[in-house]
Amino acid sequence: MNEKDLNYERSWRALRQHLVLWLDDLQVSLSLLTRISWPWKTNLRANPFKQRGESVNQFHSDIDDHGDSEDIREPLSPDSEEHFQETSSGRAVRAFPLVGIIVGLIAGIAFAISSGLGLPFLVSALIAIAVTAVLTGALHEDGLADTADGFGGGRSKTDKLRLMKDSRIGAYGVLTLLLVIAAKVAAIADLESAGETICALIASSAVSRAAMPALMCWLPSSRSDGLSATFGKPEKRYVTTGFIIAGMVAIILLGWTGIVAIIAAGTATFVIASLSKRQIGGQTGDVLGATQQVSELFFLLALAAVR
Image 1 (tube, rainbow, N blue to C red):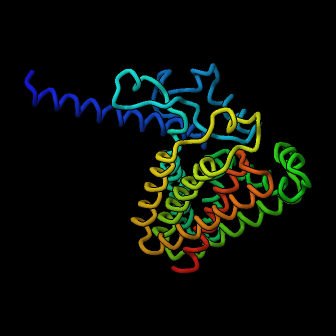
Image 2 (tube, helix red, strand yellow):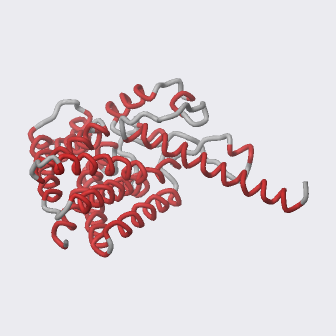
């Protein structure tokens, strides 16, 4: 084999390795953020939950109990054959926006079908929001309600964290959840067409899920026994990659209004981060869920305001 063929083989192998890494990250992100099953068989390297002796369902149970959602794998260098077989801590966060694209697309299709059947846009928007909740197991909505209960009802940091970990929902949680869902439904229903709504749902879902790793990177974990404290924060390069993906999706689908909506979502993320730091000194999985919900809401409200 000549030098040209060897270079081609190395390039093709590197491309395949990077593709497999992205597929692994997407699988892990889907397992963390949704109830969507991975469509093909995986091996141990591609499924870190089996490496820990846990099923994906058990891992979801841990998320519900502890309120944190981060990847659990060790750093690797894709240029090394030996390191390629290892796993990467926090790397899967770069695929969070890809999960958002999938969730937003399915919700958008549900909206298009509902509105195509003659249902009012308001009802179709409610169906779209319900579909996203089903796909994610209402994981983010639960985080929003727990965060509202903790921040609103607790006096000390310990009280706030205890209330956030409580599986029961309080008045603050119910009211916040209802207001956020109602505002999202109204913003979606105010968009002009099914096509515009599909683009808005895809972009908002991607951008809001890119905001979650930002908090994981900016703020320390507020729990000493949660998954966030156990597995640490993601590397900045993976967080940045997720931002770039989400930003490109929003701008391609929505144009200049996507830029305005990104700024609105970023503002919401900054507000949640500042509030969380002041309230509990950091972040938890519940706060990450609240960040996704609030940044998605601000994204949609900005679109409704400037369209």
